[in-house]
Image (cartoon, rainbow, N blue to C red; front, side, top):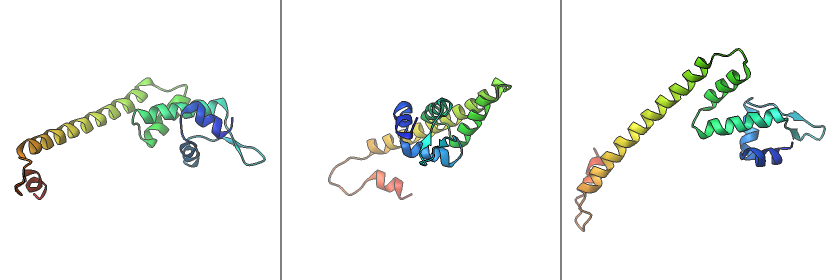
Length: 127
């Protein structure tokens, strides 16, 4: 398969596919004309990467997950540890966003939104 077909099959932009090649996550072969040729295995890896990235895994985590996927003697505990840490990171982000939402909601409620210059939102932002 050439990159255009792989992009269509995986839903990944060609630029992302080239980036994954540049950082060594995939290794398509090159034809005599310089075109990349992707095996079914490379297409599968790209699908895997697309799904992992959609779940928010970092490139480093994706690399580790791919290594574990390819290691038939892997322990599922190793995979679980990566996913559990990622889940914990997501929860921290959710908690931080909820705190931001609550603070901003309080400030919006405190602001009269009238013609007066006094604004609790600007006062809070200025420290």
